[in-house]
Image 1 (spheres, rainbow, N blue to C red):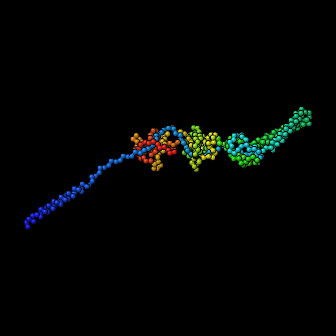
Image 2: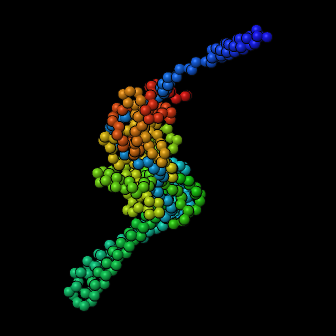
Image 3: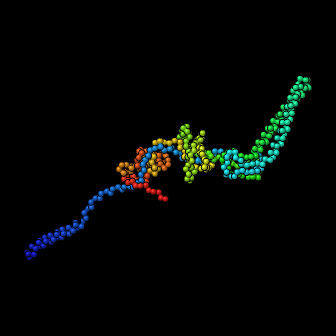
Length: 387
């Protein structure tokens, strides 16, 4: 019995030692399967954005006031007959260009010519009677001192001679009037210009002062353009008028020809309070009919030229929140720097600015939408417009 009791503690110790060994052996594979922590990655460099740039410039740029206007004829004449009669001859065609004094219509004047012949015959008779009456008056002048009867005959002869001479003058005036009426039968152009429609042709009867005109002549060279500018430009226009006549150009929309150039000839005496504008007229030489009466045109008024204006391509100006304007300027480290600007006006595709930008600075004109202040950029050639 003693041997079995002594073996129990030995077996218990061996069992405990084996259990510890098993636990220790099983722990080693679990620790070997746990992965090691990965090293932290370095931050990626900021991307470089391709942009197209242009340079800011300083130089003379005109102050242009852009508006719209209408072409108006400088003069228009309605041709009417000053005598009654039938149109005997039409010498022109509708739409024809005529010169001052050119024959337009001939009115049948045979009755007037017959009346003139009758009046000329009467005048010849009156002149003969006047000569005889003057001779009698001279004859009785020598008998004035031979008695009362002789003096009375002398006075009567003088009165007859004076009356005869007055009759001659009346006949001459009547003939002048008839000749003027005969001249009115030949209707001529009173203005150099272009004819409109001719509502009456040969064979029609016309009356003096008739409401329907025989023709309308519109002067097209020179011609005027009437337009309005906001009253804020009034001081500029007034100053330009004091220095001379400001230049104006007019161009019909869609016309591929160069704009025609004229000068201001009229500035209205008051500002229209309803629209806040002032009316202006400009005169243009128009030998080739580039402008047509009643036509709608684009007008550019140039009151002065700003000698040292800062400008950039209009594509460089961006619009931010609150309608603020800015541009991106490329610095020496090829980074885009946002600069606030004030847009004054746009002239010929260039924006005139007030900004802290120097002439020669590079401004972004393509690719600005992807930029932020401080972004790194690389310059690329401008994209060609697609044909």
